[in-house]
Length: 124
Image 1 (cartoon, rainbow, N blue to C red):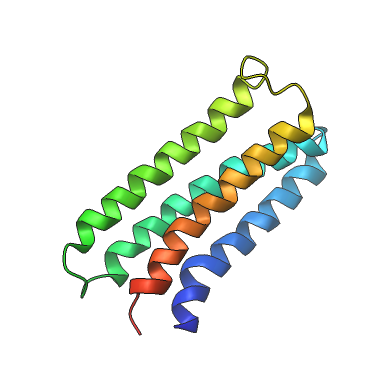
Image 2 (image 1 turned 90 degrees about the vertical axis):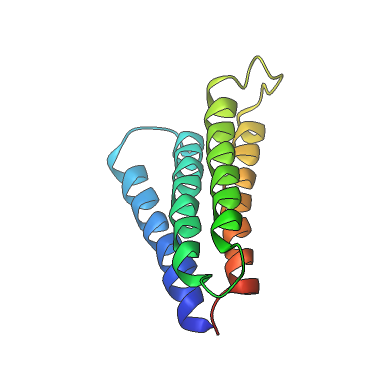
């Protein structure tokens, strides 16, 4: 179980943290912009985690149906982060910390969904 969790969740998130830090140090953007960008990247990483479900859930009946459902939810969450980032003012989100909190929360949720499915139904 530990190698499954390491290979499909922990390592991609560590890579994301590395790239977010390198992005923050090489560009002249605010911390809020870096966090929103990292949240979007977190959603993209979660799409890869959902893709790993196809390999790891072979013994579960109808695994491909569940994997596609999770993958579509990941795509929707990714678009939601982009939507909140671009249209936060029209949504009534006027403070930067609120926009960052929503985007980061959705990014964490996007990783938690396929990670939970892999933990529950993954190979042992």
